[in-house]
Length: 119
Image (cartoon, rainbow, N blue to C red; front, side, top):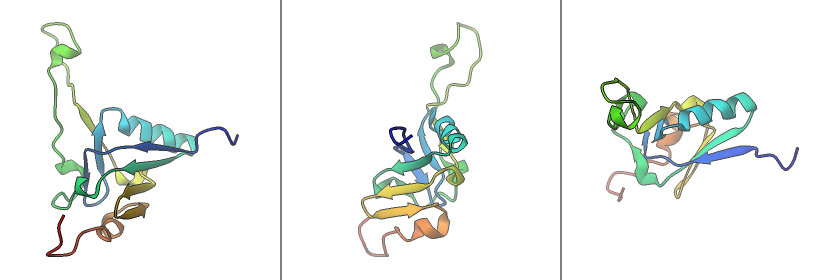
């Protein structure tokens, strides 16, 4: 089985301080599938993607598009552009400042720029 993928990498549009991650719709489903198959999921993003003011993914605003992109005229539909992957489904967050395995608030804080530093 050495030729099969052992990890999946995704990007992130925003990362909350606890490691919950917002990315294009479908990323959460990929994370669930990766976990079910025993694959690792790595989020690769610039450090600036981490929003230290957001406690968790519930605070990440989710952009929505018009229902008409999905459904016939007059039908109702929810059409989010992003979904949120909870940190417990993420095996590592990779930034230019380092790698955080099994991300949570405490581990991710190790990447946080110090007071007075840029970022």
